[in-house]
Image (tube, rainbow, N blue to C red; front, side, top):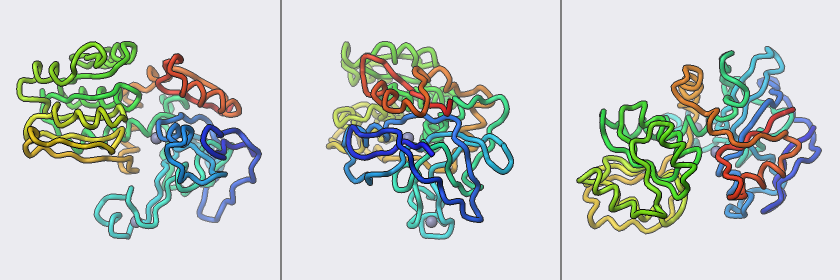
Length: 324
Ligand SMILES: [Zn+2]
Ligand SMILES: [Zn+2]
């Protein structure tokens, strides 16, 4: 079968690979659609050299079950359910956990053997393309649920790529006032379409001054989704005293907490727990992922797809690859 294989930085291409082994407790899933995420770009750009050569990539995708012919979203994290972290409700850190597309072969292959419990049925009103964009929704749900904002709280979202735009949408669903920060106007326009109350172009105005002026005391919550050391280091100056900062895009950087008295800072990653509600939010049209998809390719044209995602002039937000 054909699959998208990582063989080194700037080397991800479609190759012929052996069919997956389907164990008795597995279900074979036929690939329908997937989307390229920032994590895939870290491998591509050579930021994460620990990635094993020969690994099939892809961790956000949907397919069709071979046994029931049902359409399903594939959840990339498989956890044991009984280790220290699993018992405390943190499946992401399962001591024997697998992460498809990172530590195990991923989803961008014609077929994949999966455990049935890692498959979420796709409602009829959700398209394949939408079902291929569940991961960033699940992450945004997780982050906003963890922040527990009150109605009308200020949430500043730094970076309006796909993840930031979904944070904006979900913060609005939570009844927050959203300040969207980015360096590209086309992304800020989308943020406003998704309900951001204020859009700040950090190239044109100082985001710290602007946020302080709007919120007086500083933002109740800050979500860093731009993924740079510089934006991480800006967060203590955006948040109000005792506020909360979620570091999603990048976790390296120096945090000067001199004026961020008792503010909390934490990183947060994807967990399988929010996948069902993410699918439901898309189905109920409370969250839009369709408007984030800027480019579409066939799986066999994956090299073109990832190059497009990597080229700033393409203004890609979400790039989808499909079976046909
Ligand atoms: Zn991802
Ligand atoms: Zn575990």
